[in-house]
Amino acid sequence: MAEVERRWQAIDPLLPVPGMSGPDCGARLIVTGSGGQPAAVGACEHWAGGPEELDLAWGAARRYQLTAWASGPDVAGALDPLLSLWRDHLAGLPEAGGKDTAAVVTWPCRDIGGIAALVAHGLAPFGVVAARVTGRRAHQPAPPEGGAGSEAVAGAERHGLRIRRATAGDIDTVVRLGMEVIRFDAHFAAVPERPGAAAAVRREAAGLLAGPECWTWLAERDGTAVAMVAAQRPESAGWIAPVVRLAPTAYLMFGFVLPAERASGIGAALAARLHRDIEAAGVAVTLLHYEQTNPLSVPFWSEQGYRPLWTSWETRPAGSLRLSAAEHQEPFGRAYFGVGWKEPGPPGPHEMLIPALLVTGTWSWIRRNLPEALTRIHSAHRGRRCAEWSNGAVCAASAGLDGSPDARRALEMSHCRQPIRPANAWKVPVWS
Ligand SMILES: CC(C)(COP(=O)(O)OP(=O)(O)OC[C@H]1O[C@@H](n2cnc3c(N)ncnc32)[C@H](O)[C@@H]1OP(=O)(O)O)[C@@H](O)C(=O)NCCC(=O)NCCS
Image (cartoon, rainbow, N blue to C red):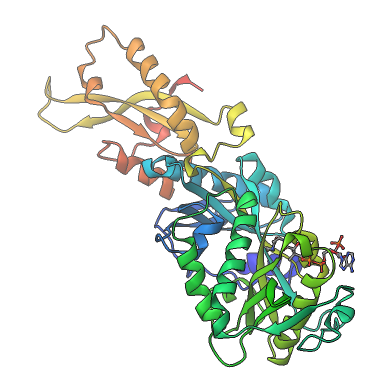
């Protein structure tokens, strides 16, 4: 982890200190490097959203979320086998094949060495967490509260526009505009509108509007709200604060301008007003999400001083996470046949030499090739009265790392009673 932290700090000082305290389903996702040290480590979280979870508006209902740490300098070389291990883990979960599921890796945007591995496994970029460091950019002038002059300051030369802070009485307006954000984003998050979305937005809106000076701003024309920007104060943004090194952290939840009012500076004027609140409160960094393919929000938020921090790479359904192209093309394992061990018993016909199969390779390779290896063994030994074979004495070991945790796990899964070492009996390669 110290090596990952050094690398992260060098590529992006906003990344947090990496730590393994997050949720983890318990799958052992470790890739060992040539020196015997972990080259990549992953923690997989199995997440299922409740029916009124707001986050469901932007993603699958059931998510398998990998947090991955890879050491350098060959980041892709470390991440690629980690993704293969994760793929095998997901392949063993029938529910990961469900329609409304996603395999999700959140990867630092500036850790560009890992992107080739993510793409090779069929993952695509969806959501981005972007960060705006307070005071880093020249202060953008914000319109004064109230109507007069607000358009001119923002560069919008339209009349009758009033920008004001929202109050608890604006909850219906905030829900209406919040739902518009969700409907627009649904195109890029590629999710249907959820039945519980309105209730979830209402709950969120109540939180956003609570307190005397909320961070929700409305732009009104002729008394009707045409645009909104809304943010969570640091007290409510703790859920996302760990993804960034600076604190305190605010979170910009909604930004929306009605289509007929866009591209005239209203969005920029609202953002500037909100940023003035944020700066006055001493917030160090403001985060928000946008979808990578949203053609309006990506340039708009960049213009307002937000820059990418994390990208969420996804494939749906989760079970469709694929092997990397290299694994598809190259043989990545071997199968050997030999006499595995002696079954204890009185000498003579009761003592049986149990034939067994040793398969070494990645778990993906073993899964794909074990059936054929078994077929070959069966045909090779037909007629030799090898009745023991049909007892299923099969042993699988991983990656030639005899004694490694993977190999031990494989031995536990097999029916072997004692470890088998290639040096003993595994002389006859049947296939590779
Ligand atoms: C993103 C969004 C909030 C921006 O609001 P907006 O009011 O259109 O934003 P602005 O007018 O301030 O800026 C948008 C563009 O208009 C341009 N613009 C600003 N003032 C202008 C003016 N007076 N005349 C002409 N164009 C102007 C800006 O330069 C900018 O163009 P650029 O990106 O090519 O530089 C709005 O497009 C929107 O609601 N999108 C749909 C919902 C959404 O995506 N929300 C964000 C979810 S994360």
